[in-house]
Image (cartoon, one colour):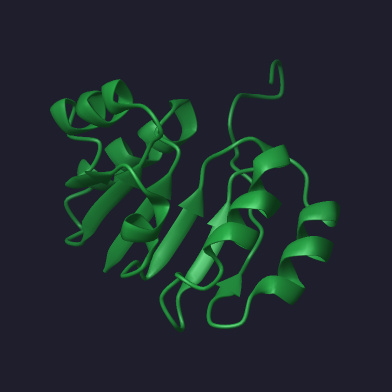
Length: 127
């Protein structure tokens, strides 16, 4: 199992650490971040096994791709990377809204399946 995390901020970094710290997960976690500093930090903190400066390299062999980016960037990323997702893979996101994303992303997906998700983060007392 190869999981790609696109965006290694709070949500993506937390997901990577959870996967790497789960003894039942025996796969590879790869990540993408725009900044070299973030990529270097992700490797140093063992958030990912591998990091890339380009999304194509991160997603092309991933069984699951998780888009940990702002809601406003999800459609743009899918549009740009749609031909590079591994055939038969699953692409999901951690955005808080879904209707617009689903409406725009579903028609773009030809070789992978997009399944919108939502992180259960925070508590009933805060965001």
